[in-house]
Length: 276
Image (cartoon, rainbow, N blue to C red):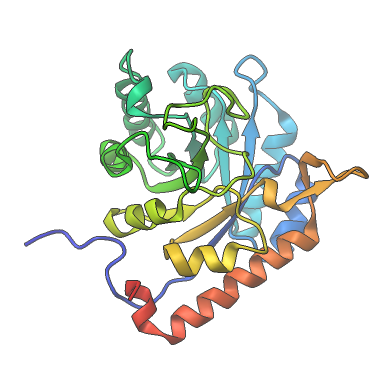
């Protein structure tokens, strides 16, 4: 008998709402009050990995019953294990810009081993792995499903995110954070994301340019287990430039409200759960 996949037809569960990058307890408290399910923080430096304010933020989130998520922008085994021991998040999230083109040094094996060790050392912490998908309209430079299959046994969630590629499908060096995927403000190819959702045995969260204006359409097209927003819910300055690490709470409310609207529609129309 084959193993049932996560996205088989069944009653629709609550769609997860996830917001990054939240670095202070005060912002976390406001997001909690708006009904956000997962609240994520980022450690931007391996050298300066111990940030008491972020630990306080995670503590605030965990005390509320909301789930905390933490991205370390490094993958050194010892450093990651030290960070997890210090912060104790509910979820650790890895987002390297992986493609089959750039695995020349066996990086995949190192990351899989890292995740295996985290599961042994911290069984209570869930692991989220970003699966890079090119922006809409570009050629897919790697087999997304095959890439996901490599990490599925050592992951608890996948998150799609937008990988910037060149016109002919080659990986661009112009990622916002070199070596990592995310915070592009661009949508990934939703058709590829939907294929990942249908094939995955673990929950898939849709990310990549998700805003209050497109989250409803993204859910209806992709049918993910959750949706994630970072730049799409950031505040802007007087010139309209996005402010990193500062949220616009009106945008966050709109994001949550639109997600719940899609959730209600899917719940009332069971045929939509199968993408029919």
